[in-house]
Length: 118
Image (tube, rainbow, N blue to C red; front, side, top):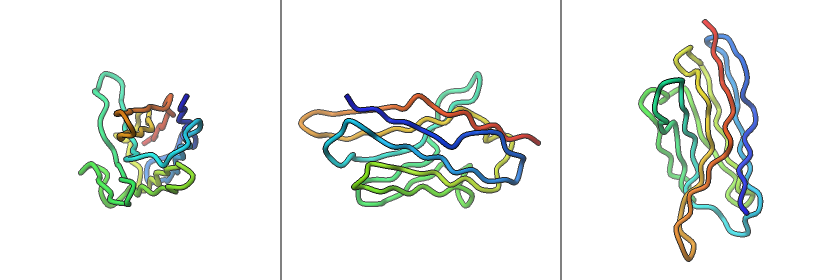
């Protein structure tokens, strides 16, 4: 069974930085696209950033220039470096991995809380 475990969330003041980590376990192949989503109270879950197995990245407009996603393909680990944080970045951040290997897969972590105080 594949498990994604996030870490690195917490409370930070506006303008500060945090680094989220997500490590996959129980998987014997390199995962496809890995990404970070977030969900604020009363809001829908939204894509923050994603990175393909070949390293192509995609960012939400709201985080471009402030967040950076990276991964270690061999270790099935992905990071999200968040800088210049704003109160509107406050949300639960979820790690995701999706792709196709014999069949489609779509794995989610349990989420980690990020709170940015003004």
